[in-house]
Image 1 (cartoon, one colour):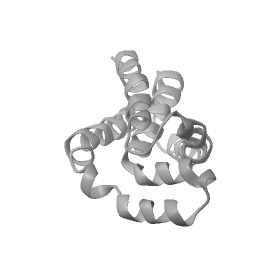
Image 2 (cartoon, rainbow, N blue to C red):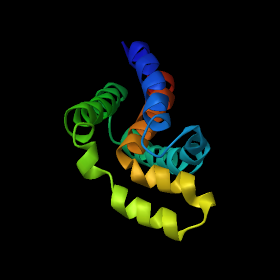
Image 3 (cartoon, one colour):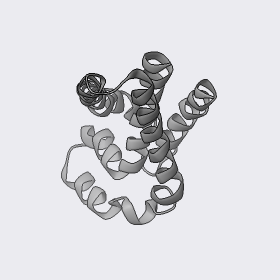
Image 4 (cartoon, rainbow, N blue to C red):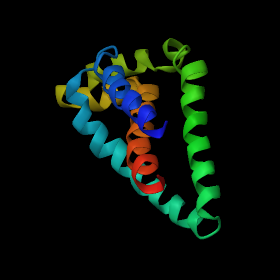
Length: 133
């Protein structure tokens, strides 16, 4: 089941960010550098602290439950409310004020819920499939 979820998430995360409004494949390197890397570092620090307190089965259940909780939250609340949650007007203003080289970071900010989903899907593959499984 873990690997099935990994396969679905791996494909879905790319589709979400590439087809998002005023976004494209050019934001993926920025996502990997400025979203995934800090997310992985923060997760590693948290995982280290938790692994000193809890047994391996407790840690596995807690982390998998947290990930599944986020994905359920994304599917039921964040994705349906994306038009309300995404700061499109602010990003349009930023795009007119900043140079064109800021297009990818603005797209990440504009579609922040998709960027968060991308990070969690990447972490699922790294953490659950590799570290915990």
